[in-house]
Length: 415
Image 1: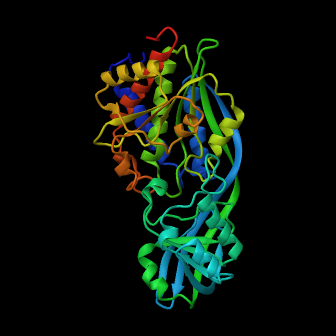
Image 2: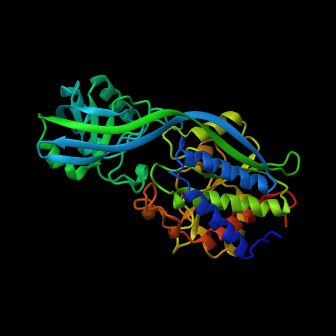
Image 3: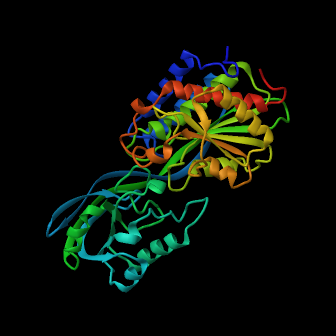
C-alpha cells in the first residue's frame, strides 16, 4: 500500500531511495553525457520505472562527450599543474606567453600563435557557451569570438571560484564549450604572479583532452490518468559534471523522482504524470532537455512541473520554491507542507530544469536543500559530492510531499 497523505514515509521507501542513490553514485567514471556511467544510469532508471508499471520511452540524441587526462604549464619559474578545459582539443607545444585582463587587451596584444593567459576581470565568471539553448550572453560571445579571431596557440585561464555558474569547483573552467576550437586549460589564480613574471618568454603547455561525438538517450516514464486529464511533470537530472559521484547533484533528485513514481504508481493517479530525469542539465548544451522539448513541444496540458535538484543534504529541511503557481496549487502545497515538518517554503532559484518551463509560463515547484546557496559553493561538481552527506529519510519524506501535492491536484482528489 502507498503512503496516505501526511503519513510518515515508510522505512521500505527510505531503503529504496538509498539504494537508488548508491547505484547511481557507484557508476564509473561518472554520469556525464557520453560516458559509460551515463548510459548505465539511463538503463537503470528505465528499468526501475518499467518495474513500477510505467510506460517508458527513450529519446535518442547526439551530443559531445569528453575524455581528459593531465594538463600542465612549464615556465622558467617551474612547472604548474593545470586542468584541461572541458571539451578542449588536445595540445602539446610551446609559445610566447601573453597576458590579458580584458577584451580590449586581447584586441591590442599580438597573440597569434602565442600562449594567452586570461586573468583578472575577464576570468572572474565562467563564460556562457555559445550553443547554450536557453539564453545567450553577448559579452561572453564577444570574448570567445575575439579569441578565435586572434588565433592563439592555446588559452590558459587563471580562475578562483564562481558558485553561480561553476558550483564548488575552484579553480573553475572559464571555457566549457565544444564550439570553441582553441585548446584551453585552467589553473588557480594563485599562479598569476609566477605567470606574469614569465610574460614575453616561451612557455610549454600540455593538455591531454579528447572530445568526441556521443550517442545518448533521454529516458522518461508515463503514468496514465483519466483521458483528457491535465499533465504533471516530475523532473530531476541524471547527469553529472566530470569526475564527481554527483550524490547531491543530482542522484538524490532522481531518487526522489523514482520514489514519487513508486508512491503514485502503487495506487494510481487520475492525473497524467510524466517522470523526466533530464540527461544533460550539467552539460554545456542541455541536450536531454532539448530532445524532450523537440519531441513534445506542446505543453498546453501541463498543469505543473515539480523539479528536484540538490535535495536531501543532512542537517536541514527540504525547501520548496514556487513559480507562477495559482491558488489551487498553493492550497495543495500549503496542506502538504503543514503535514511534513521537514519540508518548508524556500527562496526562488532559477538554475535548474524548472526554469525552462517557467520561461514558457508554466507553473513550477522546485525542491532543493534549505541551505543550498551556501552548499553550492562547496560540494556540487566536485569529488566531495558523496552519498554520506545525504539524509535518506528526508529524501523519502520529500517524495511523499511531492506525491501529496500531485494527489491533491488530481481530478477526484486521489486518496
